[in-house]
Length: 341
Image 1 (tube, rainbow, N blue to C red):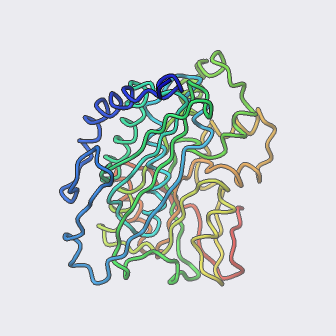
Image 2 (image 1 turned 30 degrees about the vertical axis):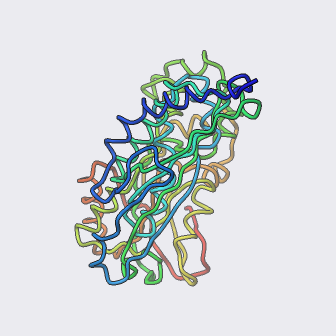
Image 3 (image 1 turned 90 degrees about the vertical axis):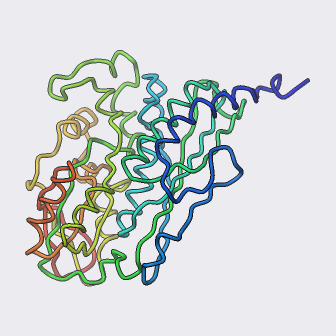
């Protein structure tokens, strides 16, 4: 009896590490002090000594049941981007710059090429966020997961000078809400997606002219990473007063999180065009509009509040970073919450 006969292939683990090294190497920053394979990752803070009050911000999340689509389509190169995005976007909401990322992959059986493909996606996401991938764990757990399935989660740490934290404390009546477009469903609400659309290869591989791609490709599109867009806004001299990452809970749960007491967000639903994918989802599933806005991002992945005189410059800075943005509403005095009109 040995570990392999129990279902754990140590040699496959070694092979996975070797295959992922080339991807991890691309994400390195000068502050990284350790290489892949150690018991921990070390990151120098020397560069940030000039900050008045350097403050660490962190985020952790997973990809959720979107992974079921990856299994069905046998596509594993983009879910790592989702994992990074869900963590670093939360850090960016606080005004932080992501520094490093760690991933955790748990699988029923370690297929080295598949694990390397997943990690390649993680590395791609880290490059988009300017974060170093300094460590992770691949756990082979036979009998706990089916052989061809896995789970993926991650953890990110960023930094911001305390005075630059985005808290919403300075919000006032008349401030403008800017929405940054999403790439699709992102990584939330897939339990409902999987109830609406048959999770069959034939359905997922069917080309939809209005989507301009197959349904599976549209649903699997990786979550946008907004780190560079928000940095561009700050570098343009625009003060971001408040910020919300539109994740699980959609507009109704996430927008109020950016508000201070005594302020309310008013968002115009006609201020931008809701992407066809969401309209298709609502139609096929018979989902009421309020539930759609309470579950999905509806085409807006990030909302930020700025002074009225800064709105045009904010949108221009976001466009310069390669993203699409538009004014979608305003802040008013009132009970903390959000109205969609």
